[in-house]
Image 1: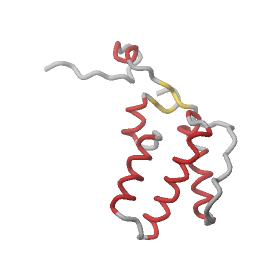
Image 2: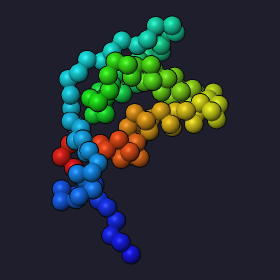
Image 3: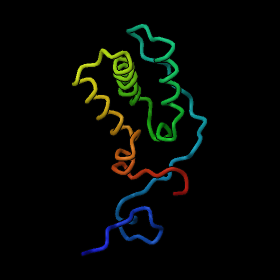
Image 4: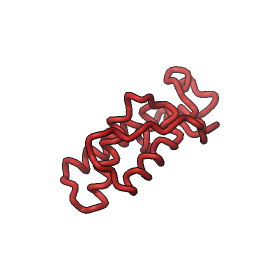
Length: 115
């Protein structure tokens, strides 16, 4: 049975084939304003800020704001118990695409700090 590739190993040839980005554990990038067009609750504003302060957000640009806003809206609906199955699936897909899940981080080639 062939040995499994470990892209996190500093001696891995696979690491060279796939670009690995070590995310900073902290960053001082500004949090963009929430998009206009709806009233945002205090909890949604707090989650928005929390998302933009994650290590993953250091890799996002302002064009990501709409996607992050959708994540906040879906998250709010999920917590309120009003989310449809589709909204819950979209939340899962968007958080993966933004690298907010372990699976998403692997797919994007991201690791935390000096891992």
